[in-house]
Image (cartoon, rainbow, N blue to C red; front, side):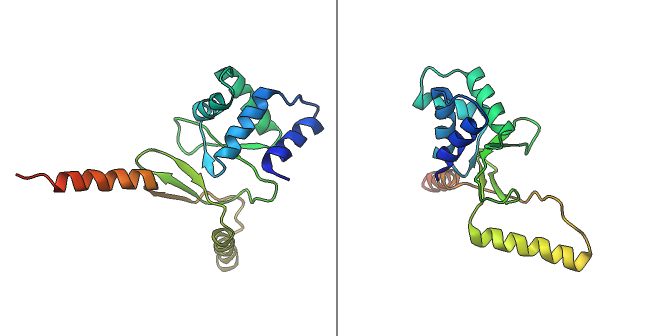
Length: 162
């Protein structure tokens, strides 16, 4: 079952209508599977699919999806809340990558990375007698787009004559 189908099933199971607006929000989130998005970004991507959708409708949909555990709300800073799609088999605790230039946030779900992440948590538990209840591992750096822009900027400056 796809994440979209799983979300639709949760809506129906909880006696909510599967409206075209709710479908647009879920489709926008599944199209940006590993990204953590703001309400505004969700709105922009949803409006690409359904131009008549409004920001308040997106906000209400996101709130409902959080209540139904379809989306998870995250706060990495005090400026914005971010939302990510919750997969049925995915671990709640996973690392994130945040671009220090554009602010893009990616959730990391690679099974090998999650295994190492789990081993680290277990090692801390075993070695320090400390039971970890939740984690928040964030890597800061540059996304590929910003890295390319920075390289282009450096190359442009390097090519100038004095």
